Amino acid sequence: MHEMSICESIVSVIEQQAVAQSFTRVRRVRLEIGPLAGVELEALRFSFDVVTRGGIAAGSELDVIELPVTGWCMPCAGSVEVRERFDACPDCGSYQIQITGGEELRIKDMEVD
Ligand SMILES: [Zn+2]
Image 1 (cartoon, rainbow, N blue to C red):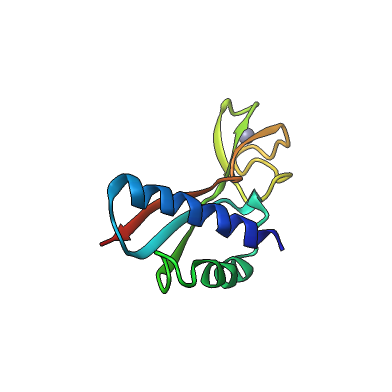
Image 2 (spheres, rainbow, N blue to C red):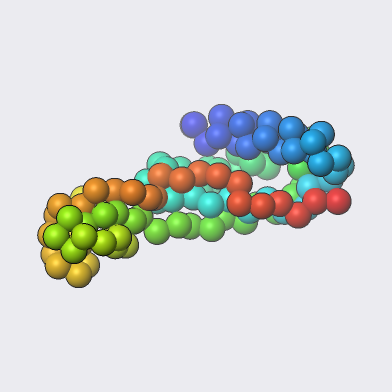
């Protein structure tokens, strides 16, 4: 389950931030996750609870903001939102889309004390 190692790296980022910004308690962590990140949200929440236990982020809320998949459509010469990697352009129906977003997995912000 790679969600566990994802959460471990999230926690190490949080701990670095805690030192840098001298906070001692994390109340809420907001993550931005793209559909192409290959993360199972239920597993992620479970892992987060396990990994944060006993640490600075123990008992904190995990908010997940799901980002869209975005791509650059050649015929439209513009950025479009699609549902998945090999989707057609919603505007022109073309499959000549270069995916530009949707693989994100990052901490957007945190509420801390
Ligand atoms: Zn198009």
